[in-house]
Amino acid sequence: LSACLMALSITANAESSNDNSVAKINGAPISQAELDEYTKVKLAGRSAQPPTAEQQAAILDEIITVESIAQEAIKLGIDKSDAVKVALANAKRRILAQKMIEQFRKDNPITEAMIKAKYDEEATKQTQEYKASHILVKETDKALAEEIIKKLDGGADFAELAKKHSVGPTGKTGGDLGWFGGQQMVKPFSDAVANMKNGEYSKSPVQTRFGWHVIKLFETRAKTPPEFKSMEQQLKMQLENEQIKNFIEKTKSAAKIEKK
Image (cartoon, rainbow, N blue to C red; front, side, top):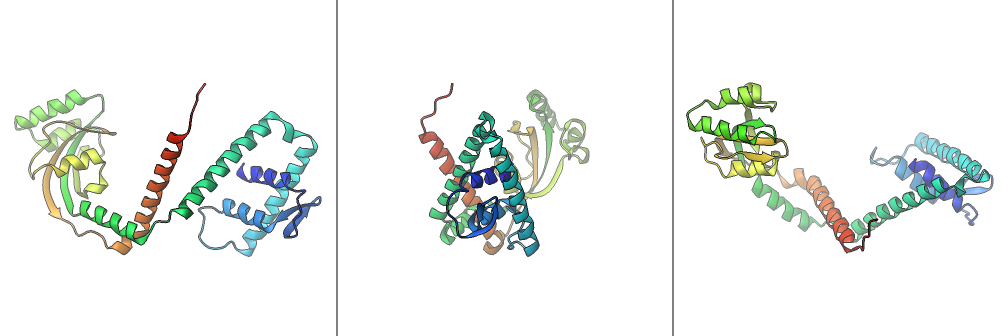
């Protein structure tokens, strides 16, 4: 669909002069810039390598095919239909939004200093590892989680209660989670574990998007954080995503929106 919409956009500008054409269909030129953009969209996310000669030939053939069909649609007046006008309007919005985000990224590059600051923040969070077990019950079963805690208070065996009540995948093995870093768990779970002492179990159920947890912490140990280079690209992507998310939220909140 994106390829077809792009081809329709190209057709709409077919009458403009263009000496840098890579092909002409019924006199309508396809410029190198248009082909490059079509190729970029077509191969997005597939490979960082430039397209091979075979790929370039296939993509040019595809855009020629789509342009030919688009021209036929124009002959029949399909471009004047409400459905096409709506589709083109939506395509225009998507393309402009995408280009705006690309421009934002260009104007707000992630610096090495920003990445190092993020690394220091993340490395601090990854200095501890925990060995724990949990009993997970459904979000509608908070009362059951509270009852399990009462049974633990009375001396019941944690692993046996996990085998009997836990709906999580570790239930069959007594709820054993093995060793994990705080970043590996959802925040309410990792926060709860970080505030527990070895040998303790949670005195109240811990809620996450998975349900209610009763957690028992067995051991804590220091962990050496990964080296900066091993996390650099991941942190850069994380910072970019955070920047873009904030930009989108700020832009949307600044807009005057009227829903009907």
